[in-house]
Image (cartoon, rainbow, N blue to C red; front, side, top):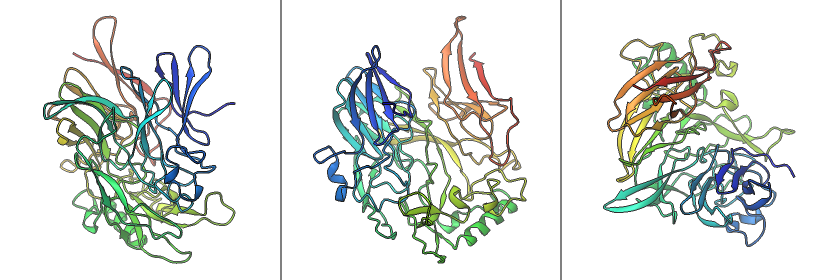
Length: 470
């Protein structure tokens, strides 16, 4: 049998542990020497009595795709023999779950498994009955922290909704507590959205998670052309509906034109696959965040199209992004050659955040990225990004990621920007650092990303860019 995999193998002793992209999703371990399958954990129950089956009403777990492990790797505590798997939302539809009532374990969950057997030790679900694609896009990170004089082996998980969960990695217990808070419920036919979602007591959410009409960008923030497009987009959408975190997409009957949901974070997430970096000396955890909204509604899928009866749509089509033209004719802005995919809310649009995991408090945050097209005094907007940071023992945080073609270094203790380099292309990747044969330390990143969807990069400028540290 050939099974597709999303992630590279994670190595533990003679085990090659991989996440699957099959039906169902899950995690498998193979003998590195023989290729024999050693164990399998399925992220969606397969029969009565399986772990988590009680969270699928009406046997809706049967023949259920999704809950795959699309992050590039897993996390292993080699000393304790535990592997941590992060699963995405159940399928086949990220935005409609009327055919899967219940919390839907182990979708959008972090699961701790015995690395030698695949037996589940504990789980933590970051999004109940996920209707927003608010999964865990990157592996969780391990960090030993000190809380009020007690050393705790922690694991740090940050899903797309940008809440940081600091858990005891042996038990799955939240270090600073979790509050199950009431959230708005969906009005989509047959949908049974979760009445609550898990909010960490600390730290606070790391990206924008709500919207009011006063948040729309103005000419004073950027320029009138941008602001006018965004005002018009909101008006053409029939007005924008948001009631805070986990706002559900409104249902739109055929031919009707109710308000449009605006959701922060959007489907790209307040964080994405770049993951976190940490400094074990200080207990600081570093993560870049982005503020980009999704707009849209849920409607019936046209007859003859695939799916489970409902789909997300918007005035700008399935892209759903609340921003100044992607060069997509549906955005209504195809003649605007100056558009650079700027979000339609006031800056900041992206930040680098440091959390002190010993206390659960935000240590510092800075805007990450600039908008070159704006005049001085307005450039420091922060930018949308893909990719993550690294932290060094020398007290530095390196990050590229932003779509402004920059590579930067920050002081890990204060957040002060110490160095920046211009690249030919944006580097939507996680940097690496290494020591050369000459004893020097180097930092490198792959630069091969577009800076804006409507500003195609010339071919041949992709590069592995390497810098020597002093």
